Length: 116
Image (cartoon, rainbow, N blue to C red; front, top):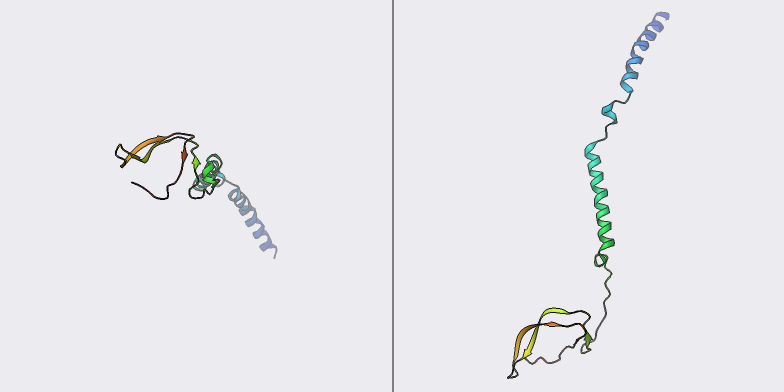
C-alpha cells in the first residue's frame, strides 16, 4: 500500500505543475473575439443613429397636426407656393393652363362647379 501511495504522490508532483501551467490564461485567451466585438459596435452605432434621427427629424416621429377644413371654406396660405399649376382665363374667357406663384397671405377656395 505504501508503494501505491508513493507512486501516486510522485505522479501528482509531476502532473500538478504541468496542469498549473496549462490552466493559466495566455495572451490568446485574453484576446477578445474581434468579430463579435465588431458586431456589437455596429449594433450600438446603429441604435445611436436611429435615436438621433428620431430626435432630430420632427416628422419622422409622426408629430403632424392635421386640421379638417370643410368644403367651401377659404384658407389663407401660410407660405408661398412656387410654380403652382393653375387655370387662368384668357381675354375670350377661356380657361388656359398656366403656372404661377401663390403668395403667402393669399386665400384659396374650392369651386363647386368647374368652368374650364
